[in-house]
Image 1 (cartoon, rainbow, N blue to C red):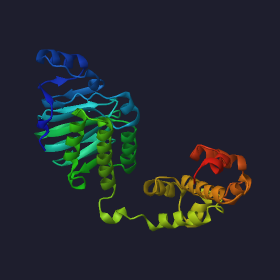
Image 2: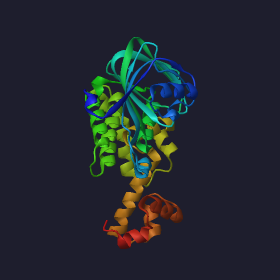
Image 3: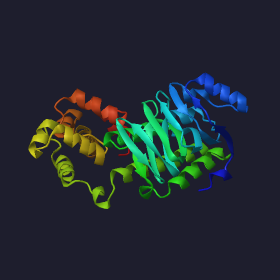
Amino acid sequence: MDYFDLPYTTITYNTTHNNIDRIQQQNERQKKKLDLSFYSNTECNMSGTVHRFGPFYVSQNAKKDLVYPATFLLMEANKEYYTKREGLNCFELRYTISGSGKLTYQNKTYQLNPGDGFLIDNRIYHYYRAEKQGWTSTIFHLDGNLVKSVYRQFAENGNFVFHKEICPSFELYQHEIIRTLKSISPYREYKASCLADLLLTEILTNTVHKNPASFDVPELIRKISSYIDKNYAEITSIDALCKSFYVSREYISRQFTKYIGLSPKEYLTHVRIHQAKVLLKSTTQPVSGIAYQVGFNDESYFIKVFKKLEHMTPLQYRKHSIF
């Protein structure tokens, strides 16, 4: 991928930096400016050449609601290059183009060869370095609620590294994200965020599911969700449900969240509220009767849950909603 058809600046480093003052001295000698906030709580040897793409001017709206970039770099690191860091307020998506490196993160060490990448939280201590042949890689610093959510899934699965075969279009996505951000076009931040969303989701999905068979929802999850669909009013508790299927609450909670996106309790609640909505529109039963019919023994609690999910009371729903 030719990133150099996009605007960039280049800085070459050949010394070790253990604090901000020494980085500042290097900047002054080279008459360059570098965002020094990236080097707090950092020990690094920036030996190599950094091509910086940007800057990216991010609106407050994007910071609140979207995936947004802090920086994008292409680093041609010499064999002496390393970084030990924590406390940087963003996530790092890094991808190896040539050479090789090593990442130590969350008590594991990963070998990074061409086509290997990783997603880490730079707030957490991490150490990476180039190997003897050097290490050329792209570095995307990202933030936003969606990145946090995707990262949590990586962390839950305990593997922060991905490989090119699970995301063959990785570099194309990156290139298009940068091109979009540097363009002058309507809703460019939304477009770039959408592309980043697609990229992160593809990495996550294909990292977790390394073979097609693993995409299948476990039969146990199908059975339990089907049981809830049919018996929502009679289920007394999630613990009782787990006992009926001889599984632990912790296990079924993880599996439901993974495959359905809701915990068993949340899923049961959604089913009950959906059935209540049907009854509110198709019958003249009082709210108290509908609450009991769908599995709530307390009318006040039913109204509270209904309002939380639907942003209106059951009677408001019956009167104003189309369905």
